[in-house]
Length: 372
Image (cartoon, rainbow, N blue to C red; front, top):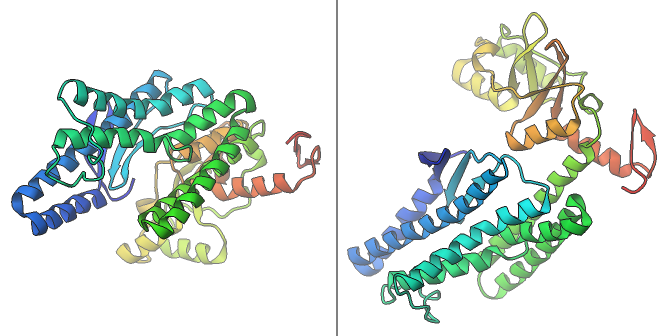
């Protein structure tokens, strides 16, 4: 994730802190210092650090459970709104997704139970409402906020854990795609409810509602892309009539090519017509600003280039786009020569075409199932 700092790793998973998280801590410290002095400021800062340690433990509940099912977990990022663990894929088996999703809230429940049983935390009614008050002990506040985190995350709306639990339960009978559609619809309904409540009580709920709505829509769209790509070869959706560049070309040539086409990503090919890099629109503009029009394409192109054989299933390319957050996937022939390009735009267009086709119809060698 951009604008984040790597502060170390636990069991092979990198821990990152977003810049906004650091600014958030600084702002809270300053506000507490202004209102209550240095003791209040340091007390509040310590509480927040412990709170986000609990959030980190929550995310590692997901991470370690995901690893048990063979899912890689590259990193976890702390944000002002919580933590985000990046899993390379979401298991489509309902029991696996259920266990991964429920593991995070269970960690918070376990932390609260330990604080109550071992540290003597007292769950008073006002502990959660006054989490910023030094009049209530830090142990009491931490126990209360962990239970709140567990309950809040179980709201049945993406991207909360409850949305994934709901999908897992629905998926047992309905299948992954249909379960995602229903869970996303429920999540959007909760988003509208949160937004309505926020109009009268707390404006922050409106921003949370927008986030939940967009996340639910994104999840449904992502799963729809994976569904439409199943059973289709990569070659059926690859762009083949596209402009390419060579490593020795000047950025000036890349600019001219950019202006003459509607492409945003340009494969860079060597003399054997094999892909060696990818140059995006943002790369072109940045290179032009920093180095001028005479710099070579090979000096500024990206070389981390995911590729897939043209005979592979299309869902392999879609998975690469999603898991690696890549702008494009290069399609290659058996001998490594360039054969085409897959982007999220091309998959999206394929989805629109499929939705427009009558059931059972065939087009360009592939068809829409009668039950789809």
